[in-house]
Amino acid sequence: MDLDAYRAEAEEFAAALDREYYLHFSGQQDRYEVEPIYERHARLFSREAVDALRSSEARLLLEFAVQGLIGCETSVEQAELARREAELELEVGGERMPFRSAAVTQANERDPERRAAIEDARNGATEQHLNPVLRELLERSHALSAELGWPSMRAMCEELSAIDLGALVAQTEDFLHATEASYEPLVQPQLESQLGFGFERLRRADLPAFFRAPSLDTHFPAERLLPSLTETLAAIGIDIASQDGVVLDTERRPKKSPRAFCAPVRAPGEVYLVISPIGGRDDFAALFHESGHTEHYAHVDASLTVEQRLFGDNSVTEGFAFLFEQLVSRPSWLERRLGVGDPGEVLAHSRAVKLLFLRRYCAKLAYELELHQAPAESLDSMRELYARRLSEALHVEWPSSGWLSDVDPFFYAARYLRAWALETQLRRLLIEQFGQTWFEQPEAGELLRGLWRQGQGHHAGELLAGLSGGPPDFSLPQAELAPS
Picture 1 (spheres, helix red, strand yellow):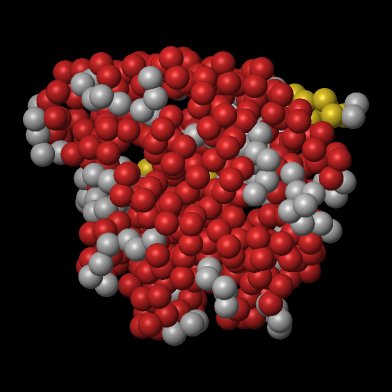
Picture 2: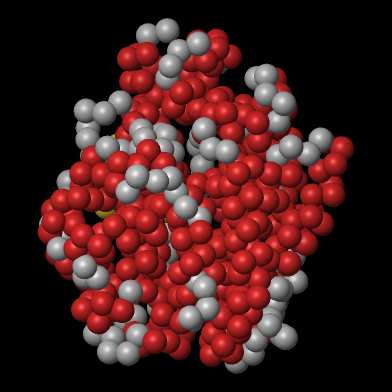
């Protein structure tokens, strides 16, 4: 196989797919036309290409090829799923709203009963219109992993990613056990502060409003959203306004996905940062998270191979994203960028939210391990397992309708969990070298740009070994969330 030719076409494919993703999920294009892209580049994902890469040393390209083969074989279902999501409308109390923007409406809704009504409508639409397609996607993906010679999707992902998922689950189970007793005492006061009640009345439908935290809006004025990012980046030596190819898309559109994302169409030359503003702290967290991705991809060394720039261990780029996201919860940043004199309530809320998210992803990963090695005849039992695991982790009755929609491809939940550990260690290193206000030190920017230039050809453990001599340690986030 001519690896250079394969790389060149892989880059063209990735650029076309990311541009299509950006246009559709930013709400600028109704249809999600992925099938023609896969058809044009089908030779990248042939069985012959996979076999040839298996016999080479190009592990990152092999992972790309296998995931692409599965994507190619399921492109019809992916396009249909996106079409249904974009066209779906919900009716709640006589009001119609787009399915995708319903989550934003729910987060801003003050009435718990109306929040529940919106959630019920979303869950019903998911069950009726999305889950049938999602199940086809899951079953076909499982069948393809078997056809390629792996005993399960889990085995395939473990080999290709070089991540020991079983060991990670053992760490996350320890985390759940260690934080069980402190979870409610830490989260309960914040629920009461933001919602007016605690776990005794809490429903899944209330969580978007809890994350939205309208009582904190005075600390996070909308007019400071973009300036706070511009000023933060400028202090570490980055003028985002003059960065060629970096586009910040914060415009409101009815069909825009409520989930913020970064689309690195051409890294480092064309990178889109997309958020759908809902107001308050959430907007700042989402913008700064995606800016971490954006700056990582915008600074990557253009001479690296495409797999080193764009593929590899996404725990790395997620680690940089969490590094920037956590700034909006740091006392020194809040004081300097937003003029918050007493950040106590912001910090307490952020801590509760982080613990909730970590416990949720711990439960998700354990569930997904079972889902992706379950025989086809046992899939129906996974619905109950999903609801039980999430309910037990978060102490709230969790609807089962998300048993397929709440699953990211190829164990991406593991990347998030490793990224939280990476962020904690990287932040500690920055504070140790540059102080609590590292985000104002040009030297910190130089260190980060040096890391960003490496892309993500190295996995998170290798990156950390070069900095602090150790692998991602999930006990560190646990220590930061321990009772004070």
